[in-house]
Amino acid sequence: MSLFRVERTVSPSPGEVWRRLTDWQAHGSQVPLTRTRVLTPGPNRVGTRFTARTGVGPLSFDDPMEVVVWEPPGPGRAGVCRLEKSGRVVRGWALVEVTESPGGGTRVVWTEELSVRGLPRAFDPALGRAGRILFGRAVDGLLREG
Image (tube, rainbow, N blue to C red; front, side):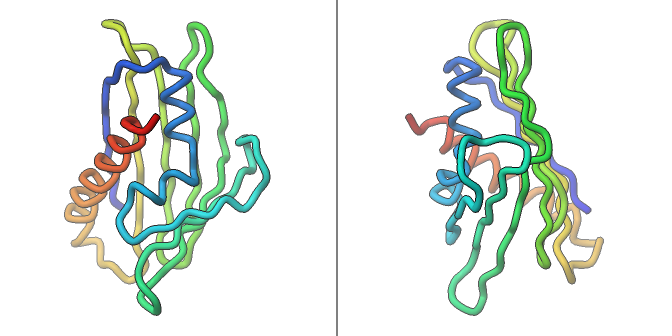
């Protein structure tokens, strides 16, 4: 398993940042060669399921996820969302935390632990670096979107 973290402080409100980061359909537009399909009707909540399909043709795989913690931010309260990944290729979890920043704006911490089937543990450091770069770009793109 590889653990990585992406941290950002941005100007939009915690509610707006939460809305952007938990727009599961929009995630597909931020990760190359990926489409996201939400499998449960909205609104988001515990039990919401979605799948990110990554790749081209026969070199594709599904990354199914389910929301297991859903606590949107509120006055004086951080927002927390935890996803469990249950795919045949990618397994693990992600934790999204959205809090008011003491200096103004909103602080985002996206923590993820991944394992890729068939990938030896010796590759965990490289997987962590790649995850940090890929998810950092995805978070940045989602936070830029209006």
